[in-house]
Image (cartoon, helix red, strand yellow):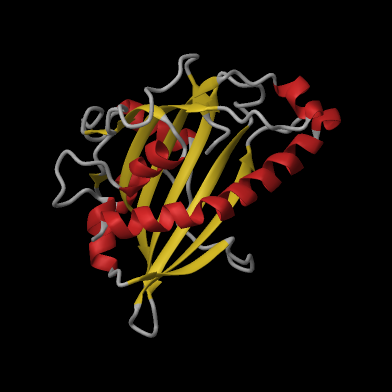
Amino acid sequence: LRFLRWLRRPPPPRGTREPALRGKAAEGWTPFLKEACEQLPGALAELEGVAPIVQQLLPGLRLPALRAALLGRGRPGRPGPLERFLTEHLDCGDVEASDWVEGGPKQWSCGTEGVIAVQHCKYTVPMPKDLPSAASKILKLPEFARGTTVNRLGQKGDSLVVTQSSCAHGVTFGDRFYIQHTHAFRADRSGQGVEWRQWTRFEWTKPLPWTHSFIKSMLDSRGKTETTTSAPAFAQIFLSSAA
């Protein structure tokens, strides 16, 4: 998600930032939401044969409480864990998050089976400043950029699965890829909480020029590293949101 940013003005200082706006963009199944879902697919499936980047126990958590927290039930006007991660960990500003819109699989899947609820987020996010010099010269990233994320929630067997499909606007090659985070939650067999697994991968919708192919490897490596380093913060947000 750090690669997804917009607007060239900084977010409000930490501690003064407005919370995510739940419901501001919520008008049900709108053409805008439909277009976002089509542009940002997100198959609700664990990556078979691929080891998760994150696998850890969320102690004391229960799946019904986590699901309720993700969908914002019982906490009207308060941001859910996915929105909180944007503001509290990624320092995103101007977050506008729709309510989760629920419906039948055919209505909401946009070609993805098993989706039972969809959420759309817009935000501004600071761009990384520590890219290798060769990549910096090519990408010429702005200080901030616009980001769009489509979150999907569904049930696969005994797992609650959430995907976050995100894209960048106004950055070099931002129209050629999106990043997808897949989270799978299931009751821990020992009964001590919920097991959380996460995968991260870049989906390329258009090829890069062959002279820039090294950028794909760089982004893939950074994405996996950031997923690992952000896991403790994400875990705490999940736990506190579902408490």
